[in-house]
Length: 204
Ligand code: 5GP
Image 1 (cartoon, rainbow, N blue to C red):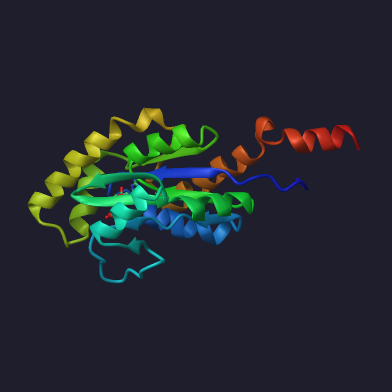
Image 2: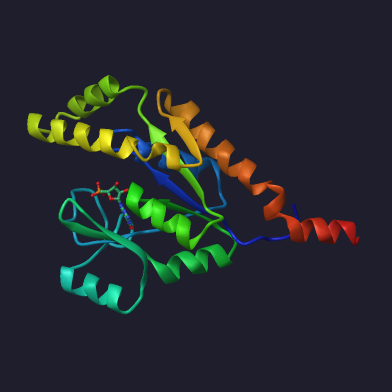
């Protein structure tokens, strides 16, 4: 399609341990029209993370100033830390025609839907709760208590899954990546997103 449309906000949510980071890393290799919304957070930086790439790391004070100054599209408090989506970066990337991936939790996802009714919401599921439990244990970094807490949290997040537009089960990584990309590519062709192109063709 020749006309460059505004990009689509793509919300991706998943309980921890569902492999959403791996899916997204693979997705960026095969879809070159994607951009990533780097969130702001007050949580501590983890090993391997880079400030400005993984997250923009803030103090609570500077995060609260961003909220007061209207610089975040949405924000939430999750496990005692603030997480929020920077407004300007996302709007700029959408204006450039990029489809913007917002990797956020379910409450933020619902808020983004209100701001961008045209967004696409994808929820990544584990094949089963038993498999999620197995994957969390395999990481070898979690205590029994953390695993139970994450499973409880996952069950809670699953309660919101039917509010999303698409469900992708991450049983096989390659299939999950292809499924997410198929959703995005199909949405790009939705008639209501291409009315201008249609007019151009009708008038050509
Ligand atoms: P983590 O600390 O494991 O990186 O992220 C914790 C949770 O916060 C994840 O579910 C992640 O998707 C979510 N999250 C990250 N950035 C944002 C954001 O900007 N807004 C919201 N609402 N959630 C976010």
